[in-house]
Image 1 (tube, rainbow, N blue to C red):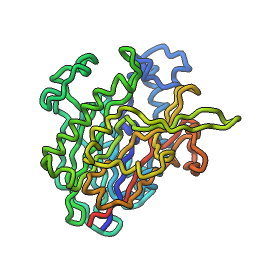
Image 2: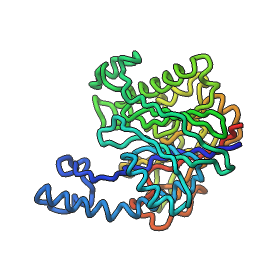
Image 3: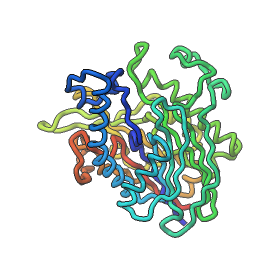
Length: 370
């Protein structure tokens, strides 16, 4: 009995317009920045037109990327609400895969923009085994103080002990697949922000991601018992906004690109994998071929890295030692630089920078659940 499990940051799957760019230049779309807009009312009218025009191509590509995972269950990040998820599944994904993801679950977390984690599931696996939803538990309200995770590093960054740990949520989903229990932990950790206190964006936000990872591990250990948790059937799925390695890109299209694997001395992932608690299944792929995201701030700062994860419990990984995840990169924009031999056919109408399925790539793995 097998299960196809996937995760994907679909990026801003919203059913509302975001007008914050009028007062916050960082949120303003680059297209509208080209024009001299005289009033908030004019800005709102133009933003609505821009968002509607762009969304159709974007969501067709998002749907193609999800369809390519062939997933029975897909964990998602940056979903606005259940209404947005239903409209997307029926209006786009259903047209790609036919009878589809009838079971959909999400809840309001802590993201200031209102976008959170979600899951979509078929009623049964491709092999015909029933997928049964048991319960959903949100951990969005857990504080640093409750878990004893407040540190001087967090205090220096302005985080108070009584504040919530998760920037979005750690959403616990209990299922039965063909009668076999499986628990999923849906996460979307703190993003790498702007430089702060003399640190770059990744270093400055690292203490918060480490606290989130510690909290996830504690939730799992308290649920299953510290001595037995690693042996149970569970997986952590989501965008962790961190990496243990990156592939640094240099050179150009004329003289050729060069790629160098760089190991990181610190990562929140280490908290979760320490002691064999769980395994990053993507690390079963070659080092140069683990990336799910292309980062660039110009030719001096470019790299490929893994931000999207399916972490398998020690027990689940041990039953699936030969399972190697797939990374679906066909929805990437043309600006993404691929190492030689990894090129893929882009989905129709993918643009230089947009439209695109997402800046992230879906990760999917087939698991033996017997």
